[in-house]
Length: 501
Image (cartoon, rainbow, N blue to C red):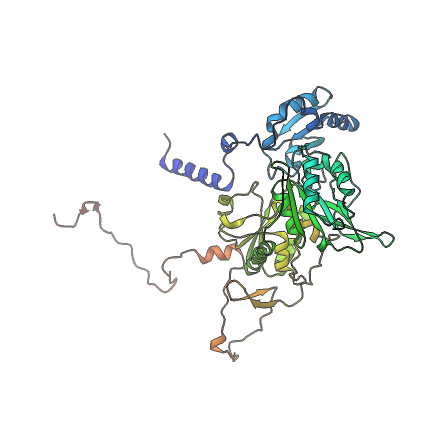
């Protein structure tokens, strides 16, 4: 028979496990939106998923173990796709589901568990580069009414000399050439962006690490959000009109934040609507600046690993550790898989979290979390004293690494720290290590009582834990006289034996 203590311990462990990691039954009970990816008929299955191209790519490189990564909304087509590919190759095909992080990223970790030689990634992608396993991207071919799009663009943009840059979601990549051909005949300065990704198919020679220009060329290359386009040297990016094809999603938000000085128009192929985006960019930037101030106020920082597949994620984690240390803060690293509120609620000692994730999952709405969750760029802005807030924003953490488009070296650790006033709390705070003057017991220390400030902060989780621990009465060791042990009162709950009945 199980003891009560064992039952209580089992319940406690189950509750802690449920808070720290996703429950096992969530995989079974989760409802999948199988229609969000569009219903693909059997006749169009091969074309939509580029099955023949996938087979030729596998045969060309002689891959033996092929992992098919499918998002939840396309999982309904996973078995027919796997069967068609398996029937044409000698290798073994298997399907990856329930990715460790966002489905837009390549799940190299799960593929490595099965010793996969390559990955075919289906559906929407953030285009983040990978390093360990060859990847082929299949974005799908969502329909778009090109005549309707061209007609509405001509009605909206009456100035034929206006600089227009075409941006698009990955699922409309197949239609871009046809759209560009029709619009370039009408507009004199119509520029088409190109998707940048390292893949097994359609590799691009462009690099998305920097914006550059060639003295011999009359164009300058701009790269934002893994999309590259070339502008004439006499044209400014701020004056360009951005035309985005796709639904309102994380990709659009990502582009608006990185190109926050440009005007955006979006065309939604689902409802045939062309509109000007009225999102208040200044308000969005003010919110991000508020998060920078919260990061400056923090003493204990939690680095949350939100990806294990994006290239250079280990480099940016190491850079964050150095930055946080030089700012006089303490950091801890957490790997918790898919992020949710209960997981981070287990660590009350942490003042702020910094999320290392792909560009599209970086801007997390932390209103539901008990502690703020900031981006890598915001933590860099808070801790690197060489940076100043200019309004420019980066969601790709590779931009702040060496050779990145916005790399700023970390200041020498020997530099004296600085003290300023928090814009949120109004209290003094210190960034970096401030050397305190040595004071002896006989020194006279002048102090203005009106301006005296006492700073008490926990330098690490252990100090925080000690500050909220109750130690009980003072022990007064060596001060209390030791007395002999004597017999105490005895009896039952109804009364002691020496009490009168």
